[in-house]
Every structure is written in structure tokens, then in C-alpha cells.
Image (cartoon, rainbow, N blue to C red; front, side, top):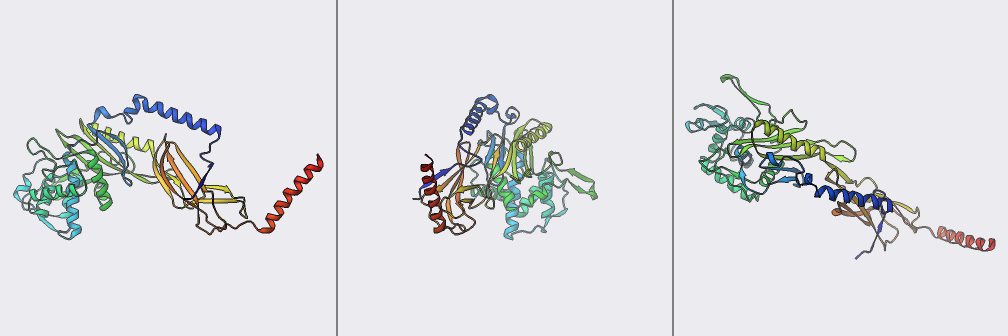
Length: 410
């Protein structure tokens, strides 16, 4: 095992002053955690049945309330319907250009709709747009029959897909989210988050569909606006799905791409879920509040850049004495404003010179609020030569003469 020596880092040194500042910061953080505000961080708990704010890329849940209990999801169901349909398109079982005939059963489907008429024909792509933009139940039902021959078989595909994705608190009874007597489709907010991440990753084109402002069919005077109330209200919002039934309340899954503001930030994407609000205005207000909370309190910070030295260390036996050390790879993470980030550098005590470019010299440990967030090797970006023999002799002679001179002076 390589022995390492910890080196003070410029940005996280152990001077008395910095120790005091860090101790005070941790104390204040502790006080915040104990305060009532910390137990209601976002402050919308009494106006929703559940909420979740998460990082799309890593799947980290940043803020949560009641996210593990299965609850009614209404038309949030259509995210799974979309996934099953697109998987069949990908497999080649159907095509986006397939023609779908609208039958008598389809026109009887109630709720939000494309107002389909018996005998009409639409492409799969046209019906998918209606599914996402206006949450059309009739379009979704027509697609389920086209894909599986009947809605019951399609629902079996939905439940099978849920199991394959590890959605433990999910069950579907239909393709639309409409009530089936006293029962409704159920998911936990955590499962909705997992499903949303999977769809965006596999079919990012969904974010194009979910930003279409309206569906219009001039031939029969049909025009309906996108159901997402946050589109064009908050810059960067580009999805994803609304839902409503009396039991589910008004629900909203939002996605937003966030641009890094400074050179130390990176772009990232948040997924926000609010469930069970009382009316459309509250859905917009609570959905907007959770998204805005994410924008105000989180950033994706670059913690290490493989092209920028993390520190300069002193190697007395090297030719140049001072050596720049670099992280072997870059590292970034979603960080909350009050998070405390420390970077500890450990240099191998038994380091042998000379060193080649990219040779390991130690390791970097990155901590968030005292817990290890990431760690990686530290390397050099250039050859590090040993100090030459004549320079060693010269340095020793200089020390010897200085010692003799000090004795003569005395």
C-alpha cells in the first residue's frame, strides 16, 4: 500500500482562521437543519400530496416529500404509454408513419381529447403529438389498439415495462389514466422520476413534442393549447406532462435545462414533480415554485478540471522544486448553495523521481459537508527530473559555508 502525506490545499487549508470559519459554517448549517424551515425546505408541503426535485443526469433526489407511496397519477400515465409505443417503433413492429383508423370505440373515450371522429385516419406520429401536447385520451386509446390489438394487451405491456425498469410502486389499469370505477393507475413519485429520466435518455425527442405550443386541425375548427402551464413562463422549461382526476388532483412533471452562469458551473437538467394540487392555478403556482427553488438553490459546480492544476506542491529533490499537480479526470456535481466543499490532497510519501508525464503522484479527495463525494488520482502533466548532482553538491556547499560563516561571526 502506498503511503500518502496530506498536503494543505489553497482552497481548503487547515489554518486556525479557516478552521474557525469552517466550524462556524458547520454550526450554522446544524442550526438550519434543526429549524422548522429545514423540515419544510421548499415550503409547499401543505399544498401538494407529494413533490420531488431531482437531477436528471445522476438520478440524485435533491428535495422530496412523500415520494415512496403509490398515489393516483391520472394522465401522467401517458409517459409510460409513450415509452411503450416508442419501443415498438424502435423495434420496427410499427412505424411513426403508420396510418391509424379511428373506430367506434375510440370516439367514445371521455375526457381530454383530439375530438376524433369515426372513420378518420391519422398517423402514429400525429396521435403521439396529441398524446403529449393536449393529453388526448382518444388518441392514446387509438394508439394502444394499433400497437397491441386492444387496450388490455397494451396495459400488460405497460406493466411489464414497469417491472423491467424496477418501478416497484407502479400499477396500470388503462393507457390513459382515466378512472376505472373506483380504481386508478398508481405510481410513486420516485417511480415517476425514474420513468421520466429513462424516457428522456432513450427518446430525447420527447422534449420536442412536449414544447409544441398547440394542436390545430383547421378542417374541423379544432385548436387546443399545450396543457403544461410553465411553458414560456420559466425560461428553460421544456416538458413534460400534466395530469388530473378528482382523486389524483392536478399534477405536473416538469423538466428544465439550466445553463451554468459562471466559469465554475456546468449546464444541467432538473426534473420537478408536484402531485395532488387543488386546482389548475395551484398546479401552476406549486410547479413553478419547485422549479424556481431548484434554480435559486442548486448549481452544477466544476469541482476538478483535468486541464487545470489543482495545486502546486514542493518537491525538494526535483529539479524545479515546485510542481503543478492535476486531477486525473474532471469532476462535477450538483451542489446546494450552503453546501461546504473541501478538497484534500494526499501526496505519496515514497514518491520516486524522475516522473514521466501522466505518472501518479497522489490522490485528490473531494468532500461535501464532510462526506466523501469523489476521489481520484493526482498526476503530473510534464516530466519531473531529479535535481542534478552538481546542484545537490552546490546546495550542500552553500549550507556548509553558511554554517561556517555563522560560527565565525559568533
